[in-house]
Structure formats: C-alpha cells, structure tokens
Amino acid sequence: MNFEPEMHETNATPTSHTGSTVFQILVCASRPEMLALTALLEASDGRCRCIVSTDVDEFRGRLLEDRCEVVLIAEEDLDRSLADDVRRLQPHGSVVVAAPTVDVDGIRQAMQFGATDFLSGPMSAEEVERRIEGAARRSRERIEHEERMHRLRSLSRRLDTEARPAADPEEVATAHEAPVETPADEAITDAPLEGDSDQVRRLDEVAMCSEFRTLIRQELDVEDLLRTALEYLLVKTGPTNAAVYLAGGDESFGLGAYVNCDLPRKSAEPMLRRLCDEACPAVAEHVDVLRFEDAKEFVSECELGSDVSSDLEMVAVPCHHDGECFAVMFLFRDSEQGFEDDTAQVLGALRSILAEQLATLIRVHNRLENTWPDAPADEETDEDLGWDDLAA
Figure 1 (cartoon, helix red, strand yellow):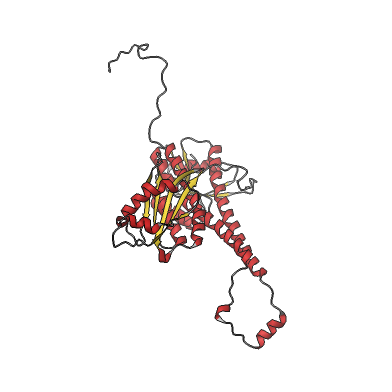
Figure 2 (spheres, rainbow, N blue to C red):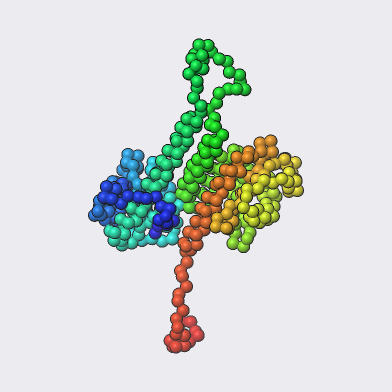
C-alpha cells in the first residue's frame, strides 16, 4: 500500500535503470517476515543491496554508519523513538514497513511515523522489488532536488560577485599607498545588484517552499501537521499570535490550532469566536493574503477587556487547493511590531503547500474508514428463500 502520490512521467526526475544502479536497503530483520523479504530482494537482479541487522539495537547503530535509500522495518519494531532516529540519521531515506497482515490502525500508525509504503501478505519477488525500488527512487529524487537547489544558490552567489565592476589597477595601487576613511553612511556592503537581488529572492523562495513541503509531508496527523507548519511559519514571520481554522463539510470552520505569543487563548476567546463565525467564511472567498484595515475597530468590538490592547495588526491567509479552501490562518500582534511586506510573500508562497497536505490527509482519512462495506443486495427475497418475518 503505497502512501506516496503517483509521479507523472512528464514531471518525474529521470532515473537510470541500468545494471550499474544499486540501491542500498537497510533491513531490520528481527522478524521472520523480514528475513523472507530480504531473501526476495537478494534474489533480484542485483539492483538492491541489503544491509541486514538481526535486532533493533544493531539496526540503530547501522542507521549512523550506513547511508541508504530505503529503511525496511517490521510493523512490530517501529515505534515513535525508532521513527525519530530514522528521520534524524537517515533524513533522505524512505521508510517501508512490513507485516504478515494489515489493518486500518496499523496503516495509520505507519503513516504517522513517516512510512512511504506498507508491504503485507504473500508477495512475489517482482512485486517486492518494484515497491522497494520505487521507494529508493523517491529518496534519490529528493537528494538530487536538494543538490540542484544548492548548486543554483552557489551559482547565484558567484553571479553576484562577478556582476560587481572590477577595480581600476591605478585606484588599487593608490589605495595601497594610503588608508582611505569610509564614512559610516557609505560603508561597503556585500549586497548584490538590484537585478541579481530579484534572482536571489526567487531562489530563496523556491528553496523555502521545497524545505517546507519536505517537512510537512512527513506529518500525517492533523495536529502534528499544524504544529510543524506553525513552527516553521513563526521562524519566518517572527513572534506572533496565530490561529488556524479548518474548513468543515458544511461550509463552517473550527479552530484547529492557536499560538500564544502575548495574548493567551482564554483572553482572546471572544475574538476567536467572531473570527470563526464571521471572518472565516468571508476570507475563504478571497485568493489573496489580506491585511485587516479595521483590525483595531474589530478587536475593540470583541470586548476583550482592559488587559488586552486593541491596537493589533492582523493578517488573514486563505489556504486553497484545487479551488477549495481547506483552512484560514489569522496572524496578529501589536501594531508597533507590525508585519513586514515580505511576510505576505512568505505566507503566499507556503499556504498552498499547507492546503495541499491537508487535502492529502482528508483523502487518506476517507480511504481508511474503519467500517465494513455494505453487503451487495441479493436478487432473491426472503420469501423466496423460505424465511418468514421472525428473527431466529
């Protein structure tokens, strides 16, 4: 059961499938089913090289010693502590979980721990190899993407340096003869030229979006997702109060998370209710990041009490994906520490990624309803089968 979205061929990174391509698979083979999977992989055409540990303690040591594309673990061995170790020591590795049987709770837990695939039941060698290689290719694509971003950023810095005019040799010689005092307001800086500055900003934005997407794709629980997303956003925006409202199925909204910078949730409760009931439906109809022009008046009408300043600056962020609003964020803090113009660009770049991950969680949740499907209707009636209306 692959948890990762399918990659369309036109967008996928080309990957070599020649015989020289070898994927490193780190296996925790403490269970019989893991030994069987290892045997199937080793019987393949040689593209999968298995590094086998016979118990969990040895496996933890291997995480530090060996770099790999795939980490293969039994469902019974995977817990929060081990998942954190894998994420920290093998940040680019794809986690694949295996078990003889599968149920809804097991799949949900594996996804929460960051697994990208779940292998269960009898499987052919070809199927095991295909699934493991798919996970390994995704790991390499993530590494290649980060390397490309690093090269682009390095190239941009070189372009900035080369774009500066070269000094006149005579001026350089004169500069060596006598020290030159530089006024404070004319201090030399390393700032790039204006045109190159735009290029650097775009590259920084692409790198930021890639980092944010990689970070939140590991979260498959709504609470964990919101906590991780808000922690990242607060690094970019600076300290602020923030509330995230999640869209319901009946065009209503509910408070999903609240961040307290200098305004406790209890004190802000009347304002949070008004934001939920009145502001969210209106903001959801917009596609742009909004700044409240009448925030002071709005806060005053909420009657938060004399201990709470009404001189707040507020920003509203609708989060859309495929034309549907999945969440609305409100950021607010004292107007003396108001939001910079760059904040709108940051929020505008990251909000669609958050909405996309929320849509993924909803889709996964709907697939994993823990109920039996309805039995197909029988064409024959109870009377035809000889039953009466009385229960046995």
